[in-house]
Length: 287
Ligand SMILES: Nc1ncnc2c1ncn2[C@@H]1O[C@H](COP(=O)(O)OP(=O)(O)OP(=O)(O)O)[C@@H](O)[C@H]1O
Ligand SMILES: [Mg+2]
Image (spheres, protein in one colour):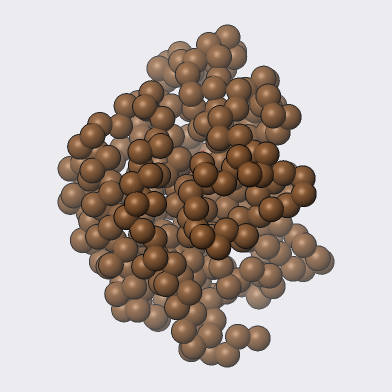
C-alpha cells in the first residue's frame, strides 16, 4: 500500500475487490462532491469533481443507461484481476451542484450517488500523447490482462484512443493505465436480453494497436488466464452485490451478470488463443 494512501493496484495478491481494500489505503468507497473542476471530453459527459476527501474524481452520472453500473463493475473487476486501473468510488453529488451543469435536467440526472474514477493528473490519453507502437511500456506485462478483461466483459471500446492512458515514468518510457468501462457488455444499454444473446460470442474484442504490439513472449497470456480462472464465484457475487441499490439493478440482472461473467471466464482463453495473429509479437522473445 503506497504511503500517501493511494492504492498500489499491483499490490493486491489476493485479488480482493476494491471495496474491501480501500479502507486499508485511506481511500473511501464513498465520497461527496464539493465542486466542479472542469468538464472532461468524451461521449458520456463526465466532469472532474473535487470531493470531500480532497481528491478529484472523473465523475460519470447516473442517467437512463447502465453507465455507472458498468463503471462500478469494471473498477472492481480490474482490481480483483490486479490490472493497472485507477481506484474508484461512489460519489454523492447534491442536487444544487447537479443543477449547475447545463444539460443535466434534459438528461434526467438528479442529485444522488454517481460514479467516480480517481483522477490521475499524470495520465494522458492517446489523443494527447503521440505514442507509436515502438514506445517502451514499463508495465507491458499487464497488457495481456487488459485484453483478457475486455474479452471477459465484452468491452468494445478499447481501440478508442481516449480510453488508453499513459503516464510518462522516464523520458520515452510509459506506464499504461486503463480507463472507461462504459462500453463493457457491448455498451451501456445492456439488459438481461442483450447479455444472454451475446454471452457465447467468440469474436475477439477490439484491441488498440499499441496494446496489441506490446504483447510479446512465448506464452504472454498465461498469467492473465490464471487470474481469471482464479476469479472466484464468491468474488463475482460480492462485486455484483455491492452495486449501489439506488442504481436499481434488478435481481434478474444481477443473476444474469454473475452467470455472464462465469461463462465468459471459461470462454476467454479459447477466444484469445484462436486469435494469436492479432498480436504480432506473440511468440517472439520479450526484449
Ligand atoms: N482517472 C482518470 N485520470 C485521468 N484522466 C482520465 C481518467 N479517467 C478518464 N480520463 C480522461 O477523461 C476522458 C473521458 O473519460 P472516459 O473515457 O471514461 O469517458 P467517455 O469517453 O465520456 O466515455 P465514452 O468513451 O463511453 O464516451 C478520457 O478520454 C481520459 O482522457
Ligand atoms: Mg472514453
